[in-house]
Length: 279
Image 1 (cartoon, helix red, strand yellow):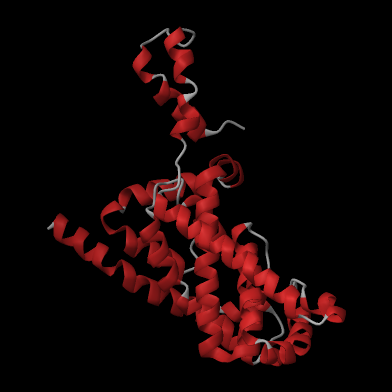
Image 2 (image 1 turned 60 degrees about the vertical axis):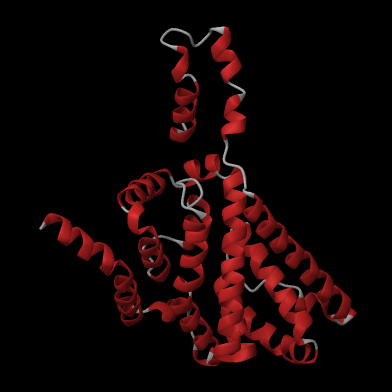
């Protein structure tokens, strides 16, 4: 499959050489520039990425340091279903109470790792946070880890993600790029709408944002604020884990309508501005 972005970069690199000069020495010298043309992390982004990695390492170390040796298999496991979440809740209740700081560091590390490398199951981690810590503390924990994990995924994608995203979601990427181009002046509003509503998958947004040149500060702010409604819904459901029969119950028609109404508030300024422009 041809990569549209790679083709565009090659054409841009050889634009100054003139027609018929693809095999010229100047064109050959221009080819190494493609590697340097890849988006690099700024100093602040590199620092944030290093902080995320440090948190992940520290959290895993704390879990290994304090977890009972005979219970590693019960504690260090990724939930894949509601049954796994219920089992983890029972196994982790005492450990999370006695070693709350260490557990939270370990929880954050696993959640960030899953989010960074697109490992499915973070919704079950969110349910577990609600089951163990309640709505307020669990909600703060989920929003923090989801934002940190999304940011880490953003950095990884900025470094090496362009070919992968172009291969996995070519149509979504073209749609996303065209929509971003239309909304450059109100980009934060649009990103908030995407984060609050299930219009595009969060994994795709994390990976595609640096590729379509969404600045990190806008990505971070939209993620931090926009994930609050969905996190609240999931964490609250974790408090009633025994009554939950399927993950689909979390986002029924009524819940989706509410999310779209909340998300629509974010794009109202853009709509009003367009209306004034047409007048």
